[in-house]
Image 1: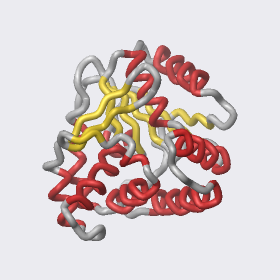
Image 2: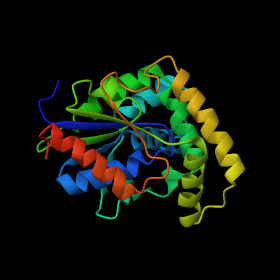
Image 3: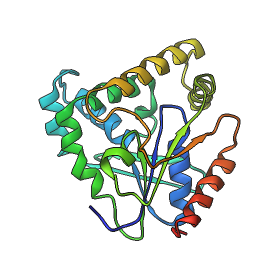
Image 4: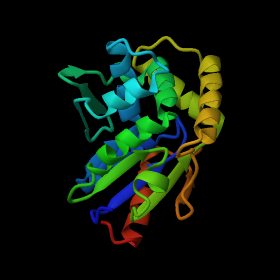
Length: 226
């Protein structure tokens, strides 16, 4: 395992972990790993080459060859490229999220992406966001956070996020999709969504993103990470 300091942030869809991770990475000047984006990118890459969405071998092969790049800025916005094409908006659709949840349940895909994710741990440090960062990918992370919020609040946040980006979405449909994704992520055979035994649990229902960032920075200070 890497000796580079890692802050691992896990949690269900809509908990705000992506925005939190990007803002922490900017504040600390650390590298960023959005593991959820990797799975969304893989689902998109599969669709672009015409792979059957249930073809595990095809997606595992793609996992090792995708040309990807992403970064965050001080506003918490993220820029993501697949090859030479900027796909930040495309991979944030609900269709992409469903595809990501499906390929993430494939054992050989998770194995193919494991070492790729670990290579993101470079000096001066890494903030890693996902669903199994603290339990599987970086079990020795110096700080592990499991971020959650009520199902209703997560659905409302996702609804606002997509509406602000111009997507035509239904709150009722989003609530149903989030419930189904939670069920699938928590019950998959490989790397199910759950807090690491030594994770700090943060329920950010009713909290602002600034309050959540400060809470995690306070935890990081107690571990002498900043």
